[in-house]
Image (cartoon, rainbow, N blue to C red; front, side, top):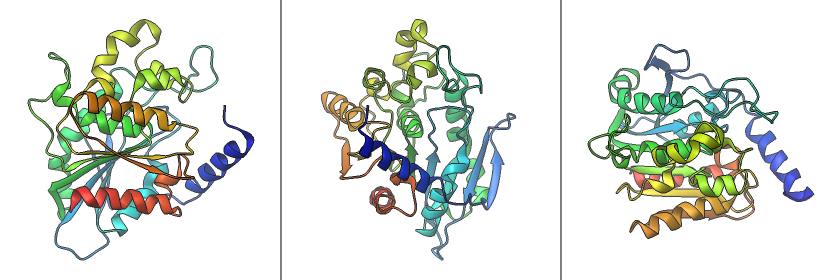
Length: 291
């Protein structure tokens, strides 16, 4: 458990990140029939004829109360830095509490993964109409927390086990992935009880976890061959640094170098908070891959 000072700082960081008004998108497009199967698009706020595309996958432990609204200020921040932005919504857990806990169930199997795969597959066609200035040849995938997991997973679909419905024939045409405090290693996340055993719930509980983990755990889907950077606050008490380090170690053992940017005195939420210096670091990491 975090000490009182760490808990107070984490609470203040979360309050700051959630204090910004939601920013309406320039366009919204559906990639399916469910109300959550939509993508919000933000046009770049600069005059460049073409802009890199950043695909954002929001966090919230794959739980229903947390939708894409809380990262709209972050999406707008990236648009003001010259990026075209696609903010993806996807189906999350039900509003019912998990068995034995107060928090809602984390994620839906297989719906959450179905949606992320479908959104990424539909994106090229949708973005051409929604944001004509978006340069699909310079696409970077980013996500925060549970969304960081989904970003890493989406970039690894070509190395999913044979027969997986989400598997692609080859790697996605990405410049890279920037995963922000991602739930990147499910074994480590469960060891540390990250977000109240959210990864365990996402995969359907203890009886399903081991069978489904090879299809869902980014740490088991390596190497990807796609440039990947993790950005992690050293003071993060929500998804601790050890989770990112465990993924980076797994990548190294698989023969792949993954960047790991550790930020001193930074917790979980400043990475998506436009008022925080850490958010500028995130934008620069994205720019390093996109330009």
